[in-house]
Length: 434
Image (cartoon, rainbow, N blue to C red; front, side):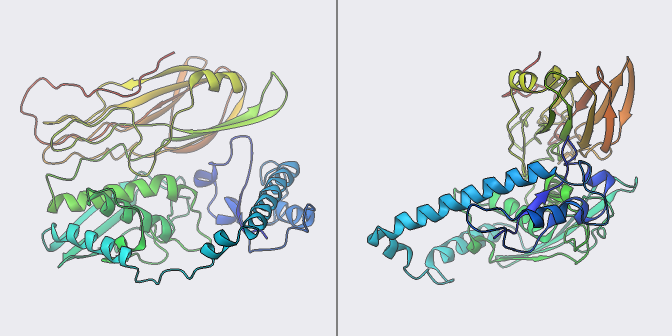
């Protein structure tokens, strides 16, 4: 059986969906469960039918190539076969099988009750009241209009209502978030308030009610495009939630971090082998300052935790040269405590590539708190034959051989009014320059 979301496109086009396409079907194929074939025999017809769906010709610009689709299906078939063999092995172990067949604990499991009480205790530490905030995405990749995210948090007797009424309607571009992404971001923020190492479970969310208007940017409905909802809008949801909670807990909530994953993908034909290639990475930024400490520099924050690809590995596997990876000095917001600095990343393409940049915080800077200054906005630049061209936050373009892409990521916001003219720069846990 199969029911996965098949990625469309190769040669670095996976993330071009937000700026260029406005429908879910142009991001991926959402398929109902279906028989893919008998054991060790793939049903190719279904794959080929999907390749030419949506009224457009099949090919590299619409879907994965046929051999890639079949190869992925063969991997899944092999994985399913491994699972069948593992279950058969368990059947030969009666004690293990009996343990697996025991009835599940009821929904009102005492452990969930304990975790629910932990969250309620944390909510009791927040003064009862109503707290509001708004923040913006730069745009949706189609128009230049900003996308509003607005939240009202009501705290009453150990319970919270998180209401996103007032947020923008779902957009043509791919920045729309499905409800599951919004719930995850809310869970993350309130989980951070616990201050304890508590396993994630449904009990933690029991005292929290989420209101997200349908067909809005935080609760998109088909056929809205949603590729950037997970990687960019989720970050802004966290930012607006923290900004609202800062009114209630000013000495616990940090200033805004970089607020974007700075998604970069590119692909083309490797002149060394004649084979196609595709590469994707996210680039870190500055962390927001806290009430007692500077923000960290060059780190992933909140809804992202990616590691960077070592320069040696990147240059060995792809026809590129990493010209620079360094901290973006001075990009963190000033304050009593300094926001962390972002990163400068320069990549030279040694062959023509099709490139996609999906980023944010290029117009609206990461906010500071309690008088702290905002961090610097990010910037994307393409240098071709010595001439620089500023790129929008969300774009797809063809870069000729020898061109250099420069991505400067945002710094974190500062916290508190500066009391000393000299600011101690935050230290970094990653610095690499080639």
